Structures are given as C-alpha cells and as structure tokens.
Length: 80
Image: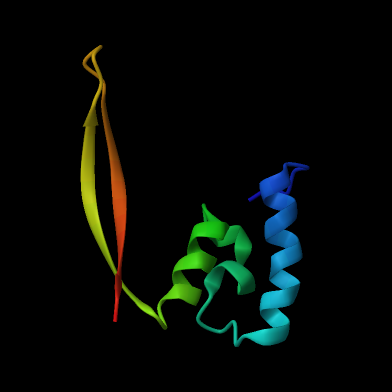
C-alpha cells in the first residue's frame, strides 16, 4: 500500500494513532500491518463493530446495461 496524499489515506493514518492508543490492535491487521490490507478503513470499521454487530458477508453481482458484470461483497450488520 502506498501512502499518497488522498484525504482517505490521511484520515486512516491519523486514526491509526488513536486506535493504537485506545484499543488492542492485535486483532486489527490494518493497524498493525497496513501494507497487507487493500482497504484498511473497511478492516478497521469491521473490527471495531464486531463488539456490537454480527457481520455477515454475501457475494453480490451487479449487471450493467452494456453486459459487464461487477462482482462485489455486501456486508450486513445485524445487532447482537
């Protein structure tokens, strides 16, 4: 992962310090090893929300008019 000057990257970097200060980041790979994670912000959000929500993943296909199929993952957060 290359750190560029995008706002999302800046927020992620500044959040890493707060997360390291207040949370045990052994289970949050995006904080401990951010270069191994593609979407660090999503990983952090999911790990912090595990306490309150049960997170399920489902593969989803989006069919566009020009015949292109986009395969993505839907994350569903359910109260515990």
